[in-house]
Length: 292
Image (cartoon, rainbow, N blue to C red; front, top):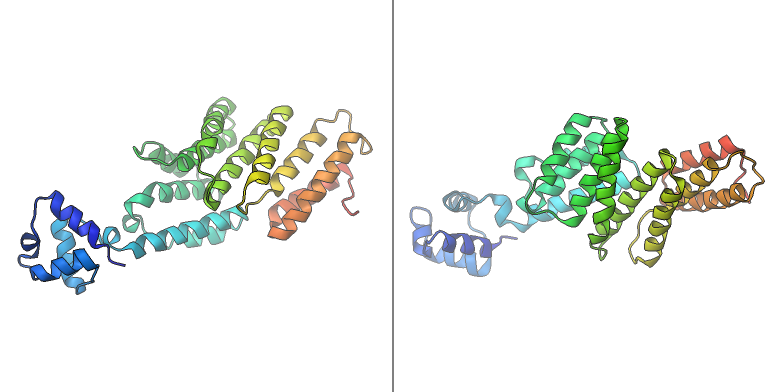
């Protein structure tokens, strides 16, 4: 849909009357219809109007924003279930100069995120995520996810102190994320998963489990659908790793087996093949049978 209000507001901000804007382009009546009734003129007329007002077509058509947001939502969904090649394919459909201003930060974050988790390109991931963090207007979700991404990068680069700094920044801002939509819920769970995974990998199992339990509690309070299997898997992995010496009949091992069963059931429901593979590998490593 054409956004006549955008044209009217820009015209007024430039101190132009409708007649001024119409000069050498169309009639004043055409400008009036565009602004008051969102009536679309011929494309060549609209292009001239946009050039005169220094606007892009993206800014005056809601469909551009809607289409971009739908694409980014689909990319997020594919990333959540580890279909990264498909996610990259979807993202490649968007051109940076055609992304509406209000979605630029999210777009750059997504480029950085896929550069990290799909391409393993730390240089481009660092570039795009830092571009995001330098933005003056940034949603809590995007800021938190950018911190999270930088934490992952530095952890992969084996710079644990820098990784800890960014993960703690993510943890400090994660509860500012809006929870009344699916993307907000996914963002919170994604950050909590990565922060808990970081602490698990550096051997701080108790802190990892504390964060994981918060994630499970949050999930239980949420009305939005989101993946939770990775958190049950993380608790199981932490319980097993903390057992010294290990014995599969130990209470912790039995509890871990139950968590793995929950994770397996949920992963099957969401067709999360990556988590299912991790569950199988962990169960085999510790000699646990998941069949009831």
